[in-house]
Each structure stands twice: as C-alpha cells, then as structure tokens.
Image (tube, rainbow, N blue to C red; front, top):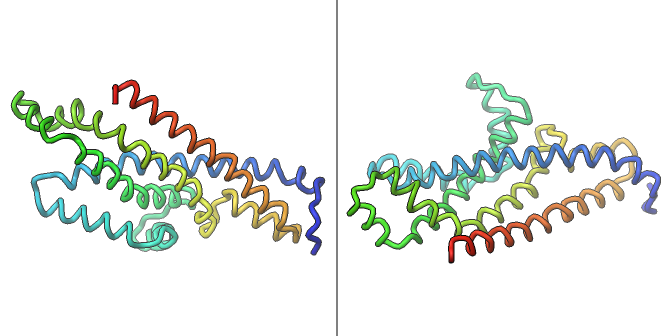
Length: 222
C-alpha cells in the first residue's frame, strides 16, 4: 500500500464524501431536533409536583447519561424488533442520538430554569398566572439565553458522534470513508478528507453559536 498522497484519487472520491456529508448533517440535525424537544419535556417533567414522575424521569435521565451511545444505537436497532419495533438504520440512529442527547440537554434546560430568579415565580403566582403561562411567557424565555452555549456544544457533539451510526450501516462520513478505503486499499485520502470536513463544519458552527448567543443577550438587554 502506498502512503503517497494521490490528488487524482482525492478528486475522484470527493463527490462521494460530500454526499455522505449531507447524510451526516441530516442525521445530526434530526437527532438534535428530537433532543431539543424531548430534553425540554424531560426537564419540565422533573419539576412536577408528582414525586413518582419526578423520580422516574430523573432516574431515566441518569441511566441514559451513564450508558454509551453506541449501546443505545444497538439496542434501538437490534433489540427493538424483538418487541415488534422494526426501524430502518436511519430512523434507529436518529432516535438513539436524539434520546441520548435529550438527557444531556434536559440538564442544560434545568440549569437555565433554576437560574431564573425566584422573585419571577412569586410574581407570576401573585398575578394568578397558570403554570403553563408562567413557563411559556416568563420562565423559558429567560432560561434559554444562558442555555444557548451548552445547547450549541451538544449540537457540535452530535455532529462529531454521527460516526457511531456506521455500526448499523448508516452511510455517513466515516462509514463511506471506510468503504472507500476497503475498495481501493487507500485510507490516507478518505480519512484525511473526513477529518478536514469535520473541522470545516464544526469550527464555523461553534463560532456562529457564540455570535448567536451574543445577539440574543443584546436583544434581551442581558
């Protein structure tokens, strides 16, 4: 095997890797959308007045956070069919990623909600606002700006964790690069390009998140 860089081979495999990049972005975006919604539900469920639900949700979050993502991917894809739940590799991967990161985002949400001054809650009760209105109109708008940095970190984290989907055959970047290497017996070019693609997406995304956080804080006068 030659380890000399081949530019002709690089241009030949680049379109295939760019297509896989699109698949990776779709998987990361869908998984993140699931995590955003489910994470907020889990955070709010831990604040109910019903102790059994609070304890159950808290233990569920700790269980998800304490087990590896790759195990959860295997569980959804291979164990699900034993209970009559048959999902495609794509669907299984996005659900597993969304479920895994929802546990982490629920803690980000919880920290943001806890940071809202207690006086805000008391004022809402004094005005006879319902629990729903208190959260939707007062608490969550104040809790989200401090949470943006953590939410952004997990967005980048999800993108970098998508290679784990290759274990169930999802054609994301690493799976495609490995397939190219197996076909051509050349791994230098595809794996190097994958690393550069991840850098080219992750670094600007992190910068945009910081800019967005600053913009939100300025708009809210924080």
